[in-house]
Length: 285
Image 1: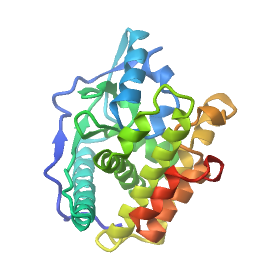
Image 2: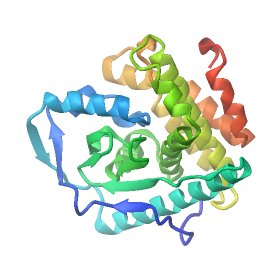
Image 3: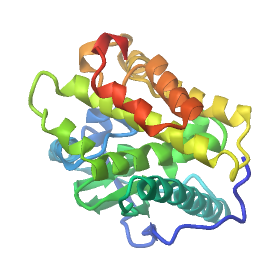
Image 4: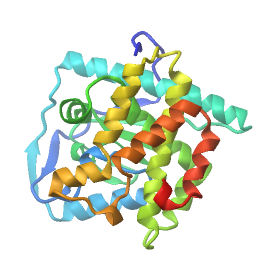
Protein backbone atom coordinates (compact mmCIF):
# COMPACT_ATOMS: atom_id res chain seq x y z
CA UNK A 1 0.00 0.00 0.00
CA UNK A 2 1.05 3.59 -0.63
CA UNK A 3 -0.13 6.09 1.96
CA UNK A 4 2.63 8.60 2.67
CA UNK A 5 1.96 12.16 1.56
CA UNK A 6 -1.81 11.76 1.46
CA UNK A 7 -4.29 13.93 3.32
CA UNK A 8 -4.45 13.46 7.08
CA UNK A 9 -7.68 13.76 9.02
CA UNK A 10 -8.28 16.77 11.25
CA UNK A 11 -10.14 14.49 13.65
CA UNK A 12 -7.11 12.77 15.20
CA UNK A 13 -6.63 13.74 18.83
CA UNK A 14 -3.10 12.97 19.97
CA UNK A 15 -3.34 12.64 23.76
CA UNK A 16 -0.12 10.72 24.35
CA UNK A 17 1.37 13.61 26.29
CA UNK A 18 -1.65 14.04 28.57
CA UNK A 19 -2.60 10.44 29.36
CA UNK A 20 -0.82 8.90 32.34
CA UNK A 21 2.02 6.55 31.45
CA UNK A 22 0.70 3.85 33.72
CA UNK A 23 -1.32 0.69 33.18
CA UNK A 24 -3.32 -1.65 35.32
CA UNK A 25 -1.36 -4.80 36.09
CA UNK A 26 -2.06 -8.05 37.90
CA UNK A 27 -5.58 -9.37 38.20
CA UNK A 28 -7.51 -6.53 36.53
CA UNK A 29 -7.99 -5.86 32.86
CA UNK A 30 -5.08 -8.06 31.87
CA UNK A 31 -6.87 -11.11 33.28
CA UNK A 32 -10.46 -10.27 32.43
CA UNK A 33 -9.58 -9.20 28.89
CA UNK A 34 -6.89 -11.78 28.20
CA UNK A 35 -8.40 -12.58 24.84
CA UNK A 36 -9.92 -9.16 24.20
CA UNK A 37 -6.47 -7.61 23.88
CA UNK A 38 -6.47 -8.71 20.27
CA UNK A 39 -10.19 -9.02 19.64
CA UNK A 40 -10.99 -5.46 18.51
CA UNK A 41 -13.51 -4.73 21.25
CA UNK A 42 -16.99 -4.04 19.98
CA UNK A 43 -18.46 -0.57 19.93
CA UNK A 44 -20.91 0.89 22.39
CA UNK A 45 -20.89 1.82 26.03
CA UNK A 46 -22.58 -1.24 27.51
CA UNK A 47 -20.04 -4.00 27.06
CA UNK A 48 -16.86 -2.02 27.25
CA UNK A 49 -17.59 0.05 30.32
CA UNK A 50 -18.90 -2.90 32.29
CA UNK A 51 -15.95 -5.09 31.42
CA UNK A 52 -13.41 -2.41 32.20
CA UNK A 53 -15.04 -1.26 35.43
CA UNK A 54 -15.35 -4.84 36.67
CA UNK A 55 -11.73 -5.49 35.85
CA UNK A 56 -10.48 -2.39 37.63
CA UNK A 57 -12.23 -3.34 40.85
CA UNK A 58 -9.94 -6.35 41.18
CA UNK A 59 -6.66 -4.59 40.49
CA UNK A 60 -4.56 -2.23 42.56
CA UNK A 61 -1.11 -2.58 41.01
CA UNK A 62 0.34 -0.21 38.45
CA UNK A 63 3.41 -0.48 36.27
CA UNK A 64 5.29 2.12 34.29
CA UNK A 65 4.26 2.27 30.66
CA UNK A 66 7.01 2.50 28.07
CA UNK A 67 6.39 2.69 24.35
CA UNK A 68 8.01 -0.05 22.25
CA UNK A 69 8.65 2.50 19.49
CA UNK A 70 11.21 5.23 18.93
CA UNK A 71 9.84 8.79 18.76
CA UNK A 72 10.48 8.79 15.01
CA UNK A 73 8.50 5.59 14.50
CA UNK A 74 5.66 6.86 16.65
CA UNK A 75 5.50 10.03 14.55
CA UNK A 76 5.23 7.88 11.42
CA UNK A 77 2.45 5.82 12.97
CA UNK A 78 0.53 8.93 13.97
CA UNK A 79 0.77 10.12 10.37
CA UNK A 80 -0.41 6.71 9.19
CA UNK A 81 -3.42 6.83 11.49
CA UNK A 82 -4.29 10.30 10.20
CA UNK A 83 -4.14 9.18 6.58
CA UNK A 84 -6.25 6.06 7.13
CA UNK A 85 -8.85 7.97 9.13
CA UNK A 86 -9.03 10.52 6.31
CA UNK A 87 -9.57 7.69 3.82
CA UNK A 88 -12.46 6.37 5.89
CA UNK A 89 -13.94 9.86 5.99
CA UNK A 90 -13.82 10.13 2.21
CA UNK A 91 -15.47 6.74 1.69
CA UNK A 92 -18.22 7.10 4.27
CA UNK A 93 -18.97 10.75 3.47
CA UNK A 94 -19.54 9.67 -0.11
CA UNK A 95 -21.71 6.71 0.90
CA UNK A 96 -23.93 8.70 3.28
CA UNK A 97 -24.26 11.46 0.70
CA UNK A 98 -25.50 8.91 -1.81
CA UNK A 99 -28.05 7.78 0.77
CA UNK A 100 -29.30 11.33 1.16
CA UNK A 101 -27.86 11.88 4.64
CA UNK A 102 -24.78 13.32 6.30
CA UNK A 103 -21.87 11.38 7.74
CA UNK A 104 -20.85 12.60 11.18
CA UNK A 105 -17.09 12.15 11.25
CA UNK A 106 -15.83 10.48 14.44
CA UNK A 107 -12.74 11.54 16.37
CA UNK A 108 -9.87 9.14 16.94
CA UNK A 109 -7.90 9.54 20.15
CA UNK A 110 -4.36 8.23 20.29
CA UNK A 111 -3.41 7.65 23.92
CA UNK A 112 -0.51 6.18 25.83
CA UNK A 113 -0.99 3.73 28.67
CA UNK A 114 -4.45 4.67 29.83
CA UNK A 115 -7.26 7.08 29.09
CA UNK A 116 -10.79 8.04 30.08
CA UNK A 117 -13.44 7.55 27.41
CA UNK A 118 -17.16 8.21 27.35
CA UNK A 119 -17.52 4.48 27.98
CA UNK A 120 -15.25 4.42 31.03
CA UNK A 121 -11.55 4.11 31.76
CA UNK A 122 -9.37 2.02 29.44
CA UNK A 123 -5.74 0.96 29.21
CA UNK A 124 -3.48 -0.11 26.38
CA UNK A 125 -4.44 -3.69 27.25
CA UNK A 126 -8.03 -3.00 26.20
CA UNK A 127 -7.08 -2.90 22.55
CA UNK A 128 -8.61 -0.42 20.06
CA UNK A 129 -12.29 0.29 20.63
CA UNK A 130 -15.14 2.52 19.55
CA UNK A 131 -17.28 4.28 22.13
CA UNK A 132 -20.76 5.24 20.96
CA UNK A 133 -21.25 7.56 23.96
CA UNK A 134 -18.74 10.09 22.59
CA UNK A 135 -18.53 8.78 19.01
CA UNK A 136 -14.80 8.29 19.26
CA UNK A 137 -12.27 5.58 18.45
CA UNK A 138 -9.52 4.99 21.01
CA UNK A 139 -6.12 3.60 20.09
CA UNK A 140 -2.83 3.05 21.88
CA UNK A 141 -0.02 2.68 19.35
CA UNK A 142 1.34 -0.28 21.30
CA UNK A 143 -1.48 -2.33 19.83
CA UNK A 144 0.21 -2.06 16.44
CA UNK A 145 3.38 -3.49 17.96
CA UNK A 146 1.43 -6.43 19.40
CA UNK A 147 -0.35 -6.95 16.09
CA UNK A 148 2.87 -6.87 14.09
CA UNK A 149 4.99 -9.05 16.37
CA UNK A 150 2.44 -11.64 17.44
CA UNK A 151 -0.37 -11.82 14.92
CA UNK A 152 -0.13 -10.21 11.49
CA UNK A 153 2.77 -8.30 9.94
CA UNK A 154 2.40 -5.50 7.47
CA UNK A 155 0.90 -2.03 7.30
CA UNK A 156 -2.51 -2.93 5.98
CA UNK A 157 -3.57 -4.97 9.05
CA UNK A 158 -3.23 -1.70 10.97
CA UNK A 159 -5.53 -0.02 8.47
CA UNK A 160 -7.97 -2.93 8.78
CA UNK A 161 -8.09 -2.43 12.57
CA UNK A 162 -8.96 1.26 12.17
CA UNK A 163 -11.50 0.55 9.44
CA UNK A 164 -13.16 -2.09 11.63
CA UNK A 165 -13.62 0.38 14.49
CA UNK A 166 -14.91 3.03 12.10
CA UNK A 167 -17.34 0.36 10.92
CA UNK A 168 -18.80 0.42 14.42
CA UNK A 169 -19.29 4.17 14.06
CA UNK A 170 -21.18 3.61 10.82
CA UNK A 171 -23.31 1.05 12.66
CA UNK A 172 -23.96 3.65 15.35
CA UNK A 173 -25.09 6.26 12.85
CA UNK A 174 -27.40 3.82 11.07
CA UNK A 175 -29.00 2.48 14.26
CA UNK A 176 -27.52 -1.00 13.96
CA UNK A 177 -25.46 -0.67 17.12
CA UNK A 178 -28.45 0.36 19.21
CA UNK A 179 -30.53 -2.56 17.92
CA UNK A 180 -27.84 -5.06 18.84
CA UNK A 181 -27.31 -3.57 22.29
CA UNK A 182 -31.03 -3.86 22.96
CA UNK A 183 -30.33 -7.60 23.30
CA UNK A 184 -27.91 -7.01 26.16
CA UNK A 185 -28.66 -9.34 29.07
CA UNK A 186 -30.53 -11.82 26.90
CA UNK A 187 -29.49 -15.26 25.66
CA UNK A 188 -29.30 -13.88 22.14
CA UNK A 189 -26.74 -11.20 22.96
CA UNK A 190 -23.59 -13.19 22.21
CA UNK A 191 -24.91 -14.22 18.82
CA UNK A 192 -25.97 -10.67 18.05
CA UNK A 193 -22.54 -9.45 19.12
CA UNK A 194 -20.93 -11.88 16.66
CA UNK A 195 -23.19 -10.58 13.89
CA UNK A 196 -22.23 -7.02 14.81
CA UNK A 197 -18.50 -7.74 14.74
CA UNK A 198 -18.64 -9.64 11.47
CA UNK A 199 -20.60 -6.73 10.03
CA UNK A 200 -17.81 -4.35 11.13
CA UNK A 201 -15.31 -6.65 9.38
CA UNK A 202 -17.54 -6.56 6.31
CA UNK A 203 -17.67 -2.75 6.39
CA UNK A 204 -13.88 -2.67 6.70
CA UNK A 205 -13.78 -4.76 3.53
CA UNK A 206 -16.15 -2.37 1.76
CA UNK A 207 -13.89 0.50 2.78
CA UNK A 208 -10.84 -1.34 1.41
CA UNK A 209 -12.67 -1.83 -1.88
CA UNK A 210 -13.39 1.89 -2.18
CA UNK A 211 -9.87 2.90 -1.11
CA UNK A 212 -7.84 0.38 -3.11
CA UNK A 213 -7.13 2.84 -5.91
CA UNK A 214 -6.07 5.73 -3.65
CA UNK A 215 -3.90 3.54 -1.44
CA UNK A 216 -2.61 1.36 -4.30
CA UNK A 217 -3.64 -1.78 -2.44
CA UNK A 218 -2.15 -5.03 -3.67
CA UNK A 219 -3.20 -8.66 -3.34
CA UNK A 220 -0.50 -8.97 -0.68
CA UNK A 221 -2.13 -6.19 1.36
CA UNK A 222 -5.47 -8.00 1.30
CA UNK A 223 -3.78 -11.26 2.29
CA UNK A 224 -2.20 -9.44 5.23
CA UNK A 225 -5.63 -8.17 6.31
CA UNK A 226 -7.08 -11.67 6.00
CA UNK A 227 -4.22 -12.99 8.11
CA UNK A 228 -5.08 -10.41 10.76
CA UNK A 229 -8.76 -11.34 10.67
CA UNK A 230 -7.80 -15.00 11.05
CA UNK A 231 -5.42 -14.32 13.93
CA UNK A 232 -8.05 -12.57 16.03
CA UNK A 233 -10.92 -15.02 15.61
CA UNK A 234 -12.63 -16.08 18.85
CA UNK A 235 -11.82 -19.74 18.30
CA UNK A 236 -8.11 -19.15 17.74
CA UNK A 237 -7.73 -16.72 20.64
CA UNK A 238 -9.56 -18.98 23.05
CA UNK A 239 -7.49 -22.00 22.04
CA UNK A 240 -4.31 -19.99 22.55
CA UNK A 241 -5.46 -18.75 25.95
CA UNK A 242 -7.02 -21.90 27.42
CA UNK A 243 -6.42 -24.75 25.00
CA UNK A 244 -10.00 -25.05 23.74
CA UNK A 245 -12.80 -22.93 22.29
CA UNK A 246 -16.29 -22.35 23.70
CA UNK A 247 -18.53 -21.36 20.76
CA UNK A 248 -21.38 -20.20 22.99
CA UNK A 249 -19.08 -17.54 24.44
CA UNK A 250 -17.96 -16.14 21.08
CA UNK A 251 -18.53 -12.42 20.64
CA UNK A 252 -16.56 -11.61 17.48
CA UNK A 253 -16.76 -14.70 15.28
CA UNK A 254 -14.37 -17.43 14.23
CA UNK A 255 -11.24 -16.87 12.21
CA UNK A 256 -12.91 -18.30 9.13
CA UNK A 257 -15.99 -16.09 9.56
CA UNK A 258 -13.98 -12.93 10.05
CA UNK A 259 -11.88 -13.62 6.98
CA UNK A 260 -14.93 -14.50 4.87
CA UNK A 261 -16.94 -11.41 5.74
CA UNK A 262 -14.04 -9.01 5.28
CA UNK A 263 -13.40 -10.61 1.88
CA UNK A 264 -17.09 -10.38 0.98
CA UNK A 265 -17.05 -6.68 1.72
CA UNK A 266 -13.88 -6.22 -0.30
CA UNK A 267 -15.11 -8.27 -3.25
CA UNK A 268 -18.54 -6.63 -3.50
CA UNK A 269 -17.95 -3.09 -2.25
CA UNK A 270 -21.71 -3.10 -1.63
CA UNK A 271 -22.87 -2.09 1.85
CA UNK A 272 -26.31 -3.63 1.34
CA UNK A 273 -24.82 -7.13 1.04
CA UNK A 274 -23.90 -7.02 4.72
CA UNK A 275 -27.55 -6.72 5.77
CA UNK A 276 -27.81 -10.49 5.43
CA UNK A 277 -25.73 -10.88 8.56
CA UNK A 278 -28.69 -9.84 10.70
CA UNK A 279 -31.31 -12.04 9.02
CA UNK A 280 -29.56 -15.28 8.02
CA UNK A 281 -29.45 -18.39 10.18
CA UNK A 282 -26.68 -18.08 12.77
CA UNK A 283 -25.19 -21.45 11.83
CA UNK A 284 -24.62 -20.17 8.30
CA UNK A 285 -22.80 -16.95 9.13
